[in-house]
Image (cartoon, rainbow, N blue to C red; front, side, top):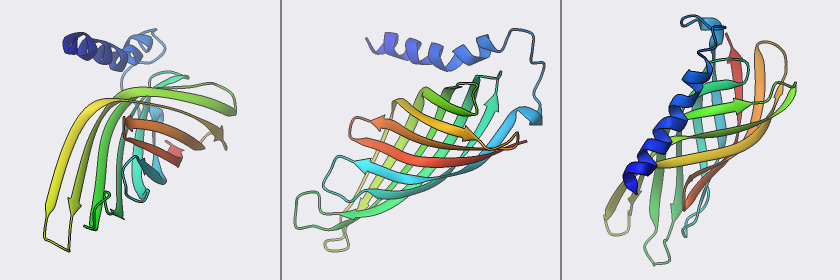
Length: 175
């Protein structure tokens, strides 16, 4: 089961490269790269407040519709996890996605990929520290607006794992 899952995720991540093999793109070019900040909140299904998240996204357009995106996000919040112990919680994610964006000025998008999430909780009350890392499948949907040929703005909802998701915005500069 895990092997089939791994093969399926790997094929979904490699699919854009096959789509780009249509002869219209040749070699890496800065003109196919976009980058920009991300801002939003991690929606955590635990007894902690939603964490404000800040990060960045770098994309490589394989063709007009498909890109490969790398994202880093970090956030911090406080929570009690249903106990009298209050803790500072740090969340960091790094992900690689195959993304599809429709070709209109106002467009929709979908993405699927792999994400590595690290969560650290530190209690000042008792000096307890807990750290957890997880890697898994992540997917998201959203929409965007192409301001002009150099800028785009996007809103998205992304499921990071079963108990954590991200709601946020990205502004990207296209080189």
